[in-house]
Figure (cartoon, helix red, strand yellow):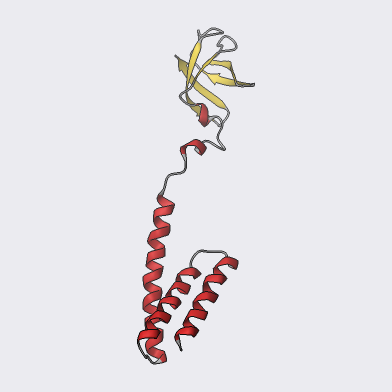
Length: 145
């Protein structure tokens, strides 16, 4: 194959990456481009060209594996940590009780809603409580602040 055929194959593979779900075809496209550059400088048989393409493919696939591995290991943005967990977003914050505690539970006005809070008996309306955890996704655990 000539270098132009390698470049055409590389371009086709890179463009195919746009239409096929996944993130691995681009690495084969880059390997085809590298094989085309290699074909400019060296006259090789088809078998030798296939071996060069295989070597470049392995090299670029490993590069992609490391690149995507680093991206995947990054922590999500902390501002969106509790995007789908509004109760978890309240942990560590302090609120006022909206009613007296009875049987280990009370209500606290948080924002424009009222949440059930598990806390110790004896707390009165207006006492400050700090949210320490979540039970079942909707009941907040709290202690006196």
